[in-house]
Image (cartoon, rainbow, N blue to C red; front, top):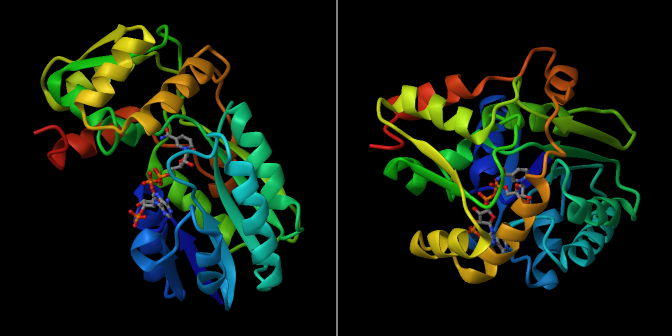
Length: 268
Ligand SMILES: NC(=O)c1ccc[n+]([C@@H]2O[C@H](COP(=O)([O-])OP(=O)(O)OC[C@H]3O[C@@H](n4cnc5c(N)ncnc54)[C@H](OP(=O)(O)O)[C@@H]3O)[C@@H](O)[C@H]2O)c1
């Protein structure tokens, strides 16, 4: 009954690992530090051996070019190893991620896809932590509404999907409980952190320069900028019901996350 967490040391993986472990379920994780590398398919079968369910978190992003081929191969290997269930972390409104979702499903392992909105924790555990700390959020996007999603909710939803016995393929759209523009989000972060955070829409070269200054490698930054230009065009400016459907409760608002992150010293 072992569950494998691919991408286990990451933002979603650690949260899922901790929940399954606390529930007394056998769990192990795979990433480069355990010898699993997305760039080397020969490293994939060993961690899949003897696993009942696997959480699939591709890094840096499922929507990047070349990923569908990797998902097709992983799905094939999972089927060959007798894995009974896959749960794939995906992005809401990300056209590039659809091919990866379909490719993973090709070999027929029942797969639940979690299409997630913009993570709240991007502001504290990812590429926007530095800008928030400096009080200046800058993105290559107009000030469109987004339903920022709490990673604690994503982890709860993933655990439900991983421990389900539903034999069907499922796709859930997960969002936070409210639509906020980035200027609204900056205001929420200002209140929680007790100091001013502003939002400014910038062009792609400026955004790339900011990411480089924050140490994000160019091969990651450029597709990230392209992705944001796509998904921050208003296509995700609606609420989705996946958290309620999977967890039977509403999603957690940005202000709750911001309060917790500030209390934990995220922007100190
Ligand atoms: N950020 C958002 O707002 C958002 C929204 C919707 C969907 N998503 C999706 O979320 C996913 C990222 O999730 P996350 O934030 O939980 O992941 P993450 O924290 O960025 O990364 C998870 C782990 O992947 C491992 N990793 C990196 N490169 C690897 C490689 N070449 N081979 C094997 N393992 C590798 C790393 O561990 P090691 O260093 O040990 O290898 C890392 O800890 C992406 O697919 C993205 O599409 C993100």
